[in-house]
Length: 329
Image (cartoon, rainbow, N blue to C red):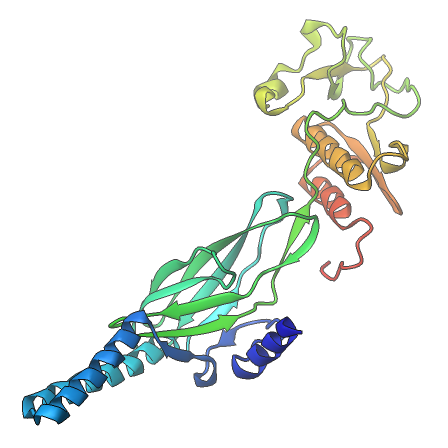
């Protein structure tokens, strides 16, 4: 109940409504100012000076009080102008794996003939790290904010807060912004996943390794393969310590099996997220070894191929499998 009242209050007063798409302008209505801790102490000092000047009829005391109050009012004006009328735009976020930090790129655009100094930008959650930026007149500045991910699927960017204490630190001017931006989170790959599955029927169409006539491609290394058949050029590009797999040359005249990553072939008793993690690990392993592989998941049946586009399509299907929120295509 209290949380609901607080949210309604923030929507009414601070205009924190639904996500905003495109470029957003921080109009006058969206910039708020309140005294900082130093500002409250400054106000208390002004009260003490005014009372003392009144009791002792100190003309210089009155003059000092009014001058300092005028400085405070000027500070409020410049603090407001330091943040008002900035244009905000969210950039695209690259997909990440669950457990990694999502990187959101935000653009702060200043189209006025006035420099903006010491603007702190970060997520509004308690404990979030802010980044200080300056924006020159008629220019733009980009900042990258990191946010941890935990679950696969689309994750929306948290609410962003911009604030400044410029120029004297007596007032804090701030505004909030909720961009209509999301990041695709892939399942976390399974550690120490089993070897790539070799499925399909034995073929005699020149995709094996028994003969040595014509080179026809590479495949995953199998126990018993001759050392002379190892694809050393491809192996040299792999990082074996990070899980890269040895590959063997294939020659015409032999027989081999296709690599088919079939979700339905995994044990039914296995947890759904573990299945997706294993499939993710297999996709990454096959892609790192440049091995052609097929992919089957639900209604998706991708042909045997390689390439970055194939990898991304497979990972996206795994990320969005059995989820209701798949708004982004």
